Image 1: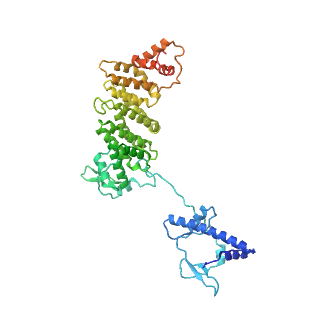
Image 2: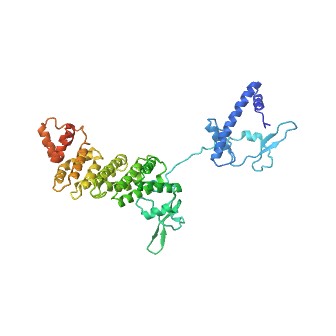
Image 3: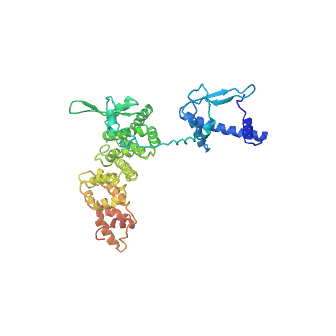
Amino acid sequence: MALWSAQETVRDAADSLGINVGDDAARSMASDVEYRIHEVIQEAMRFMRHSKRTTMTTADISLALKVLNIEPMYGYSSSKRVHFREATLGPGQSSLWYLADQDNAGGNEEVDFERVINAPLPKVPRQVNLTAHWLAIEGVQPAIPQNPSERQLKQYNTPKGAMIDSRPGASSAARDQMLNSGAGETRGASISVSDGTEQVKPLLKHVLSKELLLYFERVTAALADETNTSLRSAAIASLRQDPGLHQLLPYFIDFISEQVIHHLRSISHLENMLHLAHALLENETIFIDPYIHSLVPPILTCLVAKKIGPPDSNEHYRLRDLAADLIGLLCRNFAPVYHTLKPRLVRTLVKAFLDNEKPLATHYGSIAGMSRMGPEVIRVLVVPNVAMYGTLLLRPGVDEFAKERNVDILTRALQTLDHDAQNVVQNMSASGVEEAVLQRLGPLVGQRILALDDIKLVNAILAGAKGI
């Protein structure tokens, strides 16, 4: 049995306004009003559930009206439960419900209508606003009123605990302790001061779920297993696309560094580490920028290390090319953000290139790395030193295979020069061009460039040379 008749309610409202409404019109209007009321209540219940409450308030109704683009009701706000009382009008008549006195829910209060009518309207309730502030920026807490001050932080009662550092420079023992201890491990550090007491730094709780711990163990095991190619490929593909790896980033960076240091004789293992680094760099869902400077050293090790792989093996050239590609990727994606990244890399590679005491394999890696950094690096730093480096390759006792590989990488590096440079050979004879190229690059590399018969490349090489 319905508590109220929608059609009768519409008819009563129309009669109070002096409007005569037929049965069909009242029925149509009643169904529409009932639908609107249900829609408002449904939206209000949604706000109530999201607020973790079981009692609907007037604020839920106001928010529901706002969502439905309906003008909200003004002046209705209550933080207490609303109590209704029933008044019996007589036999056969519907009950009348009224609001009980808020101060005395069980009693009645006589209301002076004249005073109520002449009373000023209540203030329109203020809108709910949200403000955001930085809790920490790259691990540094800004000094703003919303964050606790240093004095408040010192007052925190922090228990002592073992230091477990998740940064890339942390030791493997600390990382293993973190991984084996499970989720929710607390880390802190105790420092001894001059008076013999022990001061404890605030602890930092690093929460790793069991799923993340299991994922890290499975991925590292797959990368260390050189026999199961399909499992290793699946692990790399997951690292390239998985959006939930941000908490594991310092552990993966630390894993790469340790594996590169301890497996310099295993080409396949080093390639797996570079593929792991490449996958992390290509994952667009994680923020790897703070870890770039920790990722550069193992990549540079694979690029310019003196001895990589087993003795008398030439497989290290493939590894150095892969490391050079990663150096180029780092420069393209992160040099605009970290302005010192590219100059530091160029300084390291030029130093290795110009050091005559370094082996030819190190020279190969440095030239390959600079060739991925853009034509300007080649034009300014490599071209002026090619002739001098050619004399080094022509010394007696130089390995012919290594010499051929270095001449080849120099040729490929020179081919990256800007071919739209100013035309400086248009007024020169063929013999004059040949002589200028041999003087600029030396006989070893110059003959290789002339054999390509690329006049634009020759023009780009001679552009800026003295006496041209």
